[in-house]
Amino acid sequence: MEREKLGSRLGFILLSAGCAIGCGNVWKFPWMCGEYGGGAFVLIYLMFLIIMGLPVMVMEFSVGRASQASVIRSYQNLEKKGQKWHYHGKAAFLGNLLLMMFYTSVAGWILYYFVSFVKGDMTGISDTASGELFGNMLSDVPVMVGFMAIVVVLGFTILCFSLQKGLEKITKYMMVLMLVLMVVLAVRGFWLDGAKEGLSFYLKPDFSEINGNVIVGAMNQSFFTLSLGIGSMAIFGSYIGKDRTLLGESINILALDTFVALLAGLIIFPACFTFDIEAGAGPSLLFESMAGVFNNMSGGRIWGSLFFLFMFFAAISTVLAVFENILACVREITGWKRIKACIICCVGMLVLALPCALGYNVLKDFHPFNSSSQILDLEDFIVSYCLLPLGSLVYILFCTTKKGWGFDNFLAEANTGRGPKVARWLKPYFKYVLPLIIIFVFITGIVTFEFADDFTIWKWFKSLF
Image 1 (cartoon, one colour):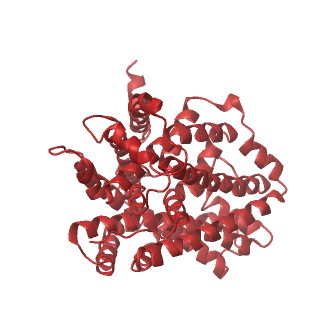
Image 2: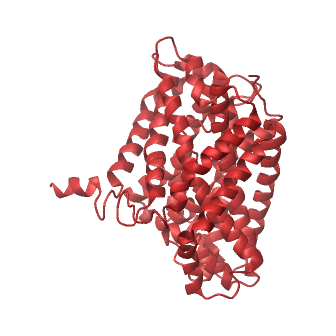
Image 3: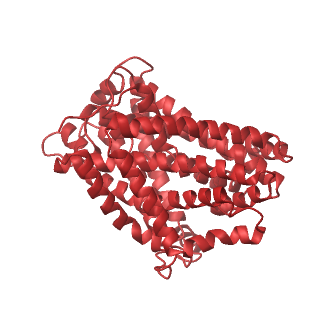
């Protein structure tokens, strides 16, 4: 099967950034920032993006470009005879499937809110009714399944076209429009009455707010937002040439990803302080709180429509990128043509995504963890708390140890082309310090996760003493 190539460097940057940019940037980052004290959280988050996220991204791109294959085949093309690194390729493929099993539902929620604002369903309703809308949506089976299905079918329909005429072309236009919408909404936020207080909370670090929880939260978020560890980035490395160094390209992608996350805060926090919305409202900040904000704002129907449109662009960009990774894996295994693979993968994903879509209604009595947890939480736990950090650890070990691909091979691939290069003196940091950071992220996530009502491993451990 002839390997497809992207048509331009801009396409690679926007596609890779689109994979990183998603709900982690425009939904999770703002509410975590609000919950963990604003500016102090932002500062530590940016630090961890540089010292942890950037190196792992370079490694994942290097494996993809050197192997010229998806994650399911990349290790097989690079590992030595008899080695077992390719088992991670299979786990990473399953990780992409699991991610889309719940992410397509979240993208469907955003699309539902966009449609509701465009239709005017949110106009003039009370704050109580605005808050109830989210719960009503979750309990409505046709809405939950229908909007999830729209996302899945839309994604694979776009991918039916060639890489350049489908995914690359659509993503270029969508990402540019998303950035324009975000800038317009951010500028609009500067003129709100609470803009000064909101921006001060968001951008002015209060170092007294920094504690262990803030540091761990920022570290986990910087890791989660880039979706590293399951080959979602490696696939785009396999689609590009060797004229540019991978450190330089990774810096560009990281900068764009961070720009979008910061813009999301510039949109949300001035609105929170203007309309007296609790900045630390948690996961409900986007759907319940922001919907109420736009409902009370002059011209709220228009601004709300634009807000959830950019949110949908952010979510669907990740869906398209991960779908492409799944599609590439399936095509490499089966040899199917793109259109046939898209049709079969679309049907398969519709079936796999059903449990999450039904988890808040038909299957609402199934609680995998605490009494408020649903199927989405189980799928998210496996991906975010296990596969992403452990997968990143595998990439690091593969690229830095003699029993893997080796640091010299990684360095040669990463530094091929024009642009900034990875320095050889960083080897001890890559080989020893980075794995310790990743292990700390993994262990912290597990011991602080609430497996049952008011029960975490950390609380249980402290109770022993």
